Length: 401
Ligand code: C5P
Image 1 (cartoon, rainbow, N blue to C red):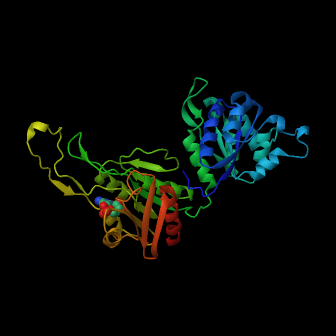
Image 2: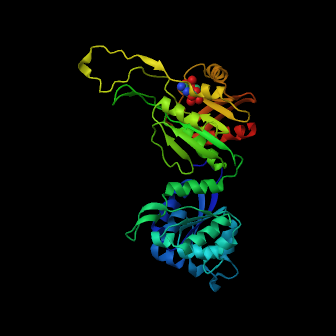
């Protein structure tokens, strides 16, 4: 998730789709990310999700239709207060009726009125029956919203509550959180830039079932990719075999071996304004990969000749073009800075990010990192979650374009 440096204010508008039952989970996740959440419900939503559950999880009262233009509330105008308070307005699920209401400025309920009154970005997550979603009337309303600069996120494909299978599901909570992080991102300094990231380990097969690899989780590379997307870049990731979470917003290409990773990087090199080589690429592969499983009884001792893999970063370093930044990562266990500096020169890198993978809470597998970033412009140290470190690295890199 995004490295928020302070608590964020989110107005969550719930409208009448059955997916409203998933919203307490979203509120709970946002709360754990140190957000303040106000929830506003249409009358239909009140019948589908418990206001008490939302109030308990958000730690705040819930705004209902009965609060809208209610004489009992005196001079308070809840929809204006909510609209002004929010840093982002999220309509999830957004029913066909709510899409119409917001697109046409109807202001017939607290949700529509708040969406109309806010100056904050509005994020809409339509979720409904597939035929309702695909109906030209709904599509037209969503198009109006998108053309006005509001972010309309396509529903997911799957089995729908109505029994149909198709496009109409509310996306997973992880995806919604990524979209909120994107909307709240304070920087868009990579807008228009193409960023190519390699991440994860490679696997060099010895036979059909055994391979040489390393414990890289891909987390640092994906943190670099995700934070570049938050800043407005188009991001492609060449990802080795790693189990990763939500990769929403990123164009992912999965590869297995170093040779496959090399080919994928070279295919995308001309496209890229910045290449971040965060993958832990295997230096060697089997010279003669066995077609069948190597049997235990074939010999007491087994020697497997290994040959060197191409150095992808070094090859990219020979194909530089003006304006393209080449960033390497160096995982070291000793003489971290000396080794990193030598690699930067040998591979023709503009920047190298070095970390001591033998230190605690650093490098492979963990969620935190401590790095030294070396470039011709200077030497910097960053420490924190991998996303915080990635964000700090982009702060420096964006000044180098
Ligand atoms: O493995 P080494 O320490 O030399 O890796 C440093 C940098 O070079 C990393 O950015 C890594 O992704 C890249 N590399 C590569 N191809 C290799 C080995 C490493 O691109 N075969």
